[in-house]
Amino acid sequence: MTNVTFHRVAEATALGDGEARHVEIGDRQIALFNVGGSFFAIDDVCTHAFALLSDGFVEGDIIECPLHGGKFEIKTGKACAAPCTEDVKTYPVKVESGAVLVGIPAS
Amino acid sequence: MTAIDAQAQIVIVGGGQAGGWVARTLRDQGHAGAIVLVGEEPHPPYERPPLSKGLLLGTAKPESTQLFPGEAWTKLRIDHRAGMRATRIERSAHRVALSDGTLIDYGALVLATGARVRRLPLDGAALPGVHYLRDLADSAAIAADLERPGRLLVIGGGWIGLEVAAAARKRGRDVTLVEAAPRLCNRALPPDLAEHLATIHAAHGVELRLGKTVTRLEGQGRVSRAVFSDGATLDVGAVVIGIGVQPNAELAAEAGLEIDPANGGIVVDDNGRTADPAIFAAGDVASHPNDLVGRRIRLESWENAQNQAIHVAKAIRGTAGGPYAEVPWFWSDQYDVNIQLVGLPQRWDRTATRGDPASGTFLVAYFDGPALVGAAAFNAGRDLRFVRRMMQLRVAVAPERLADPQVKLQDLLKPAH
Ligand SMILES: Cc1cc2nc3c(=O)[nH]c(=O)nc-3n(C[C@H](O)[C@H](O)[C@H](O)COP(=O)(O)OP(=O)(O)OC[C@H]3O[C@@H](n4cnc5c(N)ncnc54)[C@H](O)[C@@H]3O)c2cc1C
Ligand code: FES
Image (cartoon, rainbow over all chains, first blue to last red):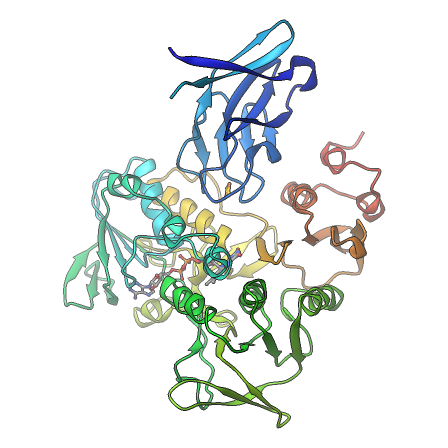
């Protein structure tokens, strides 16, 4: 996790438990989740066709894609239900002085 | 139910969506033996929905349709006999004959042969410029013809015809669509929703000719004119025929397996197994019982091709843990309209409409007595998902609550208080 730059994306209070939000950092589309009070960030674009996971349905720590029902683990990005077989990227997240920050690897 | 030995050779006939998911799930579930996938098409398994949508619009690439792209496919270690046809099943010897004369032994055999387009016996239907749409090559040929000038004539007002018409309009082509029935999507939509859909297409500039047929196509070296049942003629640049499909069940029938006279599919149980314990079927070709629908059905849908195939692979591995029973779900994309259907309602005595059809975003649910038997959603996929859940869990809902925009559908799913 060297060379990671953290970007402030939201107030921690802005996102309730079980909620998702679409954020953009540079040209990356990222989905930010609050699961049981902890925040997680993964790529927002589904690896199947084209849909934003932040428009999908959160169930516990699983996000279901709104288009064809594929599923990913929010904490690991792992694809866990058909048609999705490719994982989505995950990003480190930290909360500082009430703000949520997402870490993007420097390229 | 007895599982098939983990070292056995499993042969899958049909390298489409269902065949691909059987292969992949067998590996996911730890099948160690050889898996042979016999597929007539030259490609690794792919999904067909983009063929009438993104590929015609140019917003998706053929590679993107692949089920398991790149390395994922190689990693599955599938013995893929591409471009090969299975021609005969020898049930007592447990082997399959291929078009090149090879005989392959099987411990279990899965028939995932899908369906083929129904052809229209019409003078001129073999002329260049006249297309059907089932595979990647068809889609590429239609996309190429959408680059040419001249009107596109679509014969058939079902989902495929309507999606092609929408894509052609979006690409600026003049489009006429002719349908023999008095309305669109005759089997899938009730009259009011068919009318709604017709209005959408008319608003996008499709010239609809309902209750009419084409009697002849004409042209010198390429189709250029259509003649209609009412004597009218139309100059055309290309023609796409979409009048439905028929299941590829001959291989099974010739091997003495039972075919459902009602739908032409291979008769299987709720684990996808035929009366022969070593032979299974999944996808468009399988006629299976569905307890939630209350009858035997054969579906032509993306989701069934995927999930029934996954179930069959698990049944083979002995890990299915219950019958295959899902509320049928289907979608179609036309212009900026996403249509989703759940259930296969045959009769209903009440409907509940949520949202205003005039706004373009609404859902209609169908009730047979107290039972919720289906729903159709126009740009209301989120709502539909909850209705589907209600059907799957057989939750009792009152039509007026479902229609009430103040009532959250999530709340209707909670046990009654
Ligand atoms: C253009 C198009 C758009 C669609 N859009 C949607 C949509 O929006 N939503 C939706 O829910 N569904 C849609 N569908 C339906 C969905 O794609 C099908 O239900 C699904 O493809 C069925 O999968 P399958 O594997 O059962 O059959 P298929 O996909 O038909 O695959 C069967 C394969 O088996 C091969 N085969 C057949 N016989 C033999 C043999 N004897 N030996 C070797 N190989 C053989 C065939 O060549 C074929 O490749 C669409 C279909 C098409 C054609
Ligand atoms: S786009 Fe996400 S499941 Fe298809």
